[in-house]
Image 1 (cartoon, rainbow over the protein chains, first blue to last red):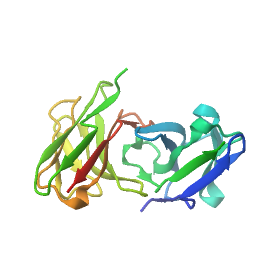
Image 2: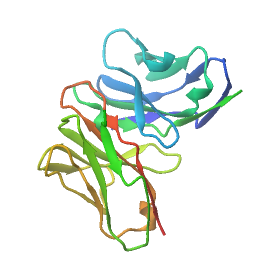
Image 3: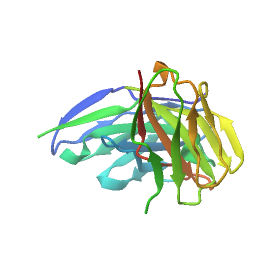
Image 4: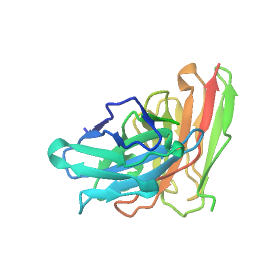
Length: 115
Length: 113
């Protein structure tokens, strides 16, 4: 069975500092990986996705993620955090060749940004 | 650009009451999904549909029912509300093309008292 672990429940960073959110997955085949962001009172918005090719993926809002098969990880990074990045972030894994709807989601990481 | 629209945004139900959460999408997506999100948890799939007239259970279907009479609409029915169904409910849709993402509605916050 596929699973996703986001080890950090809550992270606080200062505005302008760099950010890395961790995601580890368990999947028996080639994974299809996503990061979604959920702002307060909003639905989930896709930040980026990976299913093949270059293991460093660029997304919206200046985010990037790196797929490391050997570590079963897909960590999300941003070089300089803005106050508007405060939100909840979800990593998800699905099957390559399908759409994301039946993906397995992690429990999320809440990001707080200090001024 | 409406995307996925859910109504209502908030609702308080008494134990044993029934209600329907509405979801409609205007992207002509074949796939639609209902999730629940409990505090501190990720999304759990309740039901999904791969097209009009076709529905299937997800991970946590007990206490819920769905129907899909049109491509656009995918309502979720709670028949006998219980406190355990207090949650935030998200509807999502996706194309049937591979390696595509799901698009989410803004959610319905339901409290059962």
